[in-house]
Length: 509
Image 1 (cartoon, one colour):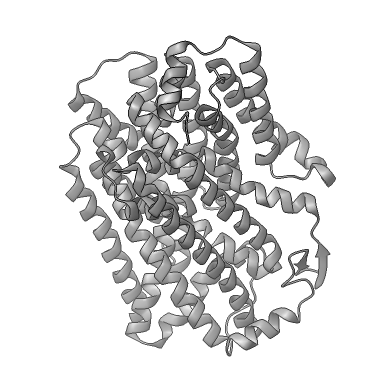
Image 2 (tube, rainbow, N blue to C red):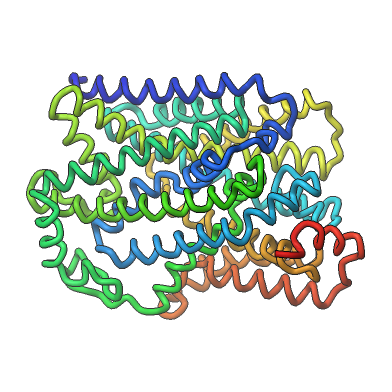
C-alpha cells in the first residue's frame, strides 16, 4: 500500500471512529423507546432538514446520478432530479407539519403506529405496515452494505465480504448504541461531508478537463447530450428521443417521498412544528444544489475521460466516476490524498446515512409494531430498549447475508424499494392527513394493493415495453390511491371520535 493509500485509509478510519464516538455519546440519552426511535422529539430545524435529506439520498447521489449524466447526458438525470426536488418540497410543505402535530396528539412513535392510531385499528394496519417496512427495508439496507463493500474492495483491493462486514458492524454499532439521535446527528455530519465531496470533485474535475469552457464544448459536441427532450446514446453516438411518457416516469420518483418512513420520522421528531418552515427551506436548497452539482460532475467526468486523463467508463462502471477522480486527486501529495479521503468518506457517508435510518425504521417495525402492538408482548421500558437494539442486530445479520454476493445489484434494489414505500405508504399517508372520510378498510386495501402492484407492474407489465415501460411507482401509486378512495366510500364512515381527532390535528390549514 503506497503513501497516498495510507493517507486515504487514515482519513476514512478517522471518520468511521467519529461515527462510533457519536453513538457512544448518545447511548446514555436513550432511556425509553420514544428516545430510541424519535429522539424524544427534540431535533432542531437544521438537524431535521439535513438528516432527512442525507438519509434520503444514499450513495445514489454520489455514484448513481453522476454515472447516469456521464453516460447519457442531462436528460435522464435532470428529469429524475426535477421529480425529486418537487417531491422533496411538496413533502415538506404538505405533510411535515400535519404529521408532526397528528402523531404527537396520538402518541405515535413509528409510521405503522401512526396508521394504527389514526384509524383506531388495533392490529390490521400495524401488522401490514410493519411487514411492508421489513420486506422493502432489509434488502434496501443490504444494498447499502454492498455499496460500502464495493467501495473498499475497488479502492484497496481488499476482500469484498470482509470490507462489507466491517462497514456493517460500524453502522450497527452507532445505530444500536445511540438510536435516533445518533443516526440524525451522524446524518448531519454526513451531509456536510457529502457536500464537501461534491464541491471538491466538481472543481478538480473541471480543472483536469482543461476548464469548464472545455467541459461545455465537449458536451455540446455530443448529439442530445445537453438536451431535455433527447438523450445521448453512447453505443451509437447519436441522440435518442425522450418522450412525454418517459418524462412522467422520471418525474414520478418524487411521489416516493410521501411514503418514505425514514424521512417522515424526521418530521415527527422535530422539537417545534413551526420550525419545519425553516427546515423545508434548508432541505430544498440543499437538494437542488447537491443534485445539480452531482449531475455536472458526470458531465465534467466525461470531459476528463475525453482529455485522456482517466479511462473511458462504460456501463455500470460510470458510477465509479467520483472514485476515479478521487484516486487521480490523491496523486498530488499528502494534502490532496487527505482531500481524496474526504471525498471517499463522502460516498461512505451517503451510504451510511441511509442504512442507519433504514435499520431504525425496520427494527421499530419488528420490536414495537409486531412484538408489542400486534402480538401483545408486554415489556418494560428497559426490556423494550434492549429488544429494539437486538432487533437492529438481527436485521443487520439478514442484510449482510443478502449482500454477501459482490455482483449483487445496488441501485436496482434502491429503485424497487423506493417504489415499494412510495406506493404502499404514500397514498395512505396523504389520505390520512387530508381526507376525513378515509377509513381503516381503505387504508388497508390501498396499502396492500400498492405493494402488490409494484411487483405486478415491474415483473409482468413493464417488460412488455412501449407505453408500458413506466417506472412502477407511478401506476402503483395511482392504483393505491384509487383503492383507498373507493373502498373508504363503500364502507362505513369513521366514528365521531376519529373525526374529532382529525379536526383537532389537521382539519384546518
